[in-house]
Length: 73
Image (cartoon, rainbow, N blue to C red; front, top):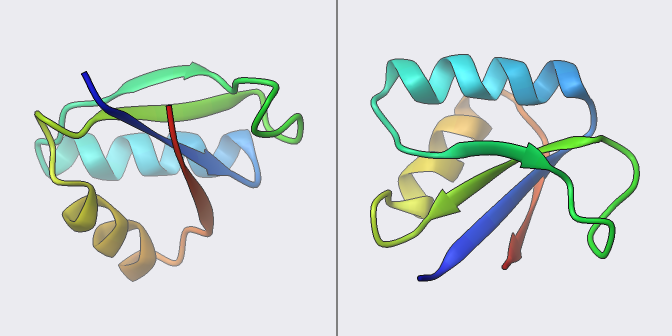
């Protein structure tokens, strides 16, 4: 499987993104942020790129003014 990790500036942004993405019907998991990527925010979103279109997800995040970093896992 291929995953992308979406890391945000704060837990508040993770929770806001979760609410927005759930409403849009995307499949993802909330996970602890892997230490190799960041120690700023303790939570991240993991997306299985075979089940959800990461480009659509990032467009929605940007449209809602959520700043993020995207990593391969």
